[in-house]
Image (cartoon, rainbow, N blue to C red; front, top):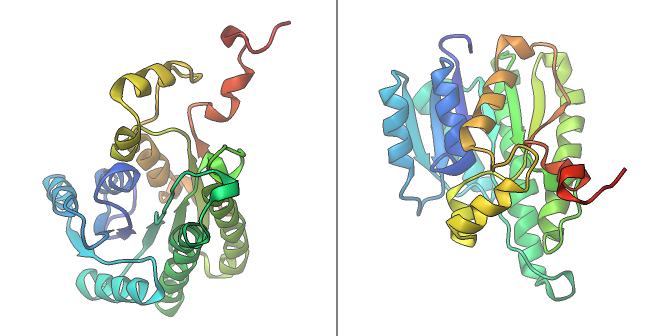
Length: 261
């Protein structure tokens, strides 16, 4: 459980992993400030579900792909909720494409939306922690693609690898303030975005090929986030926690015919 009266700011909380994190933090006792892009139609539904769990929730629409948007979000979050104790930093942008033909503007947008915005947001929240002497928690949502060279995902993998290194550097600097900084690496998670790319049949069949026989669920990432924000993780910082159902080792299984003794 998370200490009562703590407020968590979760970005990208309209659906998918961000929503899973927001709901699990609410179940663990936190009040929420949730964010999604201005055109999102999902944010209010997440807020309704959080309030049904008996927690306070303040939805804020803002584009956090630039510094000004991050400033507006943090200022409004602290104004509405009073303070922030936890940040789940979940901004991301990804578009698959061949390296040889990948547009420069898409590469720049991926780095901006996945790595640079994570820097902006975490810096602003950390400044709030230090100013108000809050021993806060920052959890970045990374990806197994930070470690795996997945084809057609050069920009996204580079951004997430940079995010992991940035997290470690931040954790070193913020340790003196009692601020804990970690990252979660989801594997293949069953989100609306995946269903926009693949059919339900493809997702089911590909899930069977994974070590645990299925894709992960957003709330399973949320449970990891809630753990890292709880007293049980008081001595954990600078750590990358894979929550991938063994995805990184899916090609190492004897039963898939890839290895033979």
